[in-house]
Image 1 (cartoon, one colour):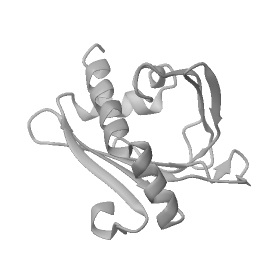
Image 2: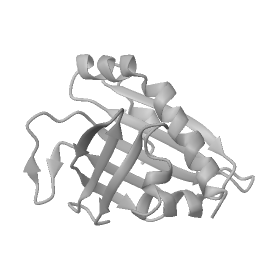
Image 3: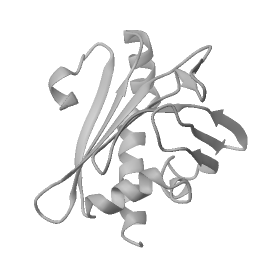
Length: 158
């Protein structure tokens, strides 16, 4: 499924970038909890804990240190297409418990770019135009772009 064809500009944010690392490494980085702290939030912020149960309904929980403040994010995987696509959300926590105030659903698409690298697409879907705008104002493109840069740099070390 190509999410690029059904983006809603009112509620979705998305970007695509080519990464100079093979798709297999990008997949490994996104699906193994030991890799997440190396790229998942823009530095100097950091991930201090990550729990992954890689199956639909399985947990994708992260804890961040943002300027000394501890932030916990609980979520679940919605869709996993081996080596190609990951969909996760904070709308639910493990056991399909609804979140009080969900923020977004993220879609990560990974494809071979034909040059030994990865065509990487990150999409954030929001419940409302206001949530989408808040995310853009928070720096979606800069922040997720930085995460893609960090992912590429880290994956090169593997």
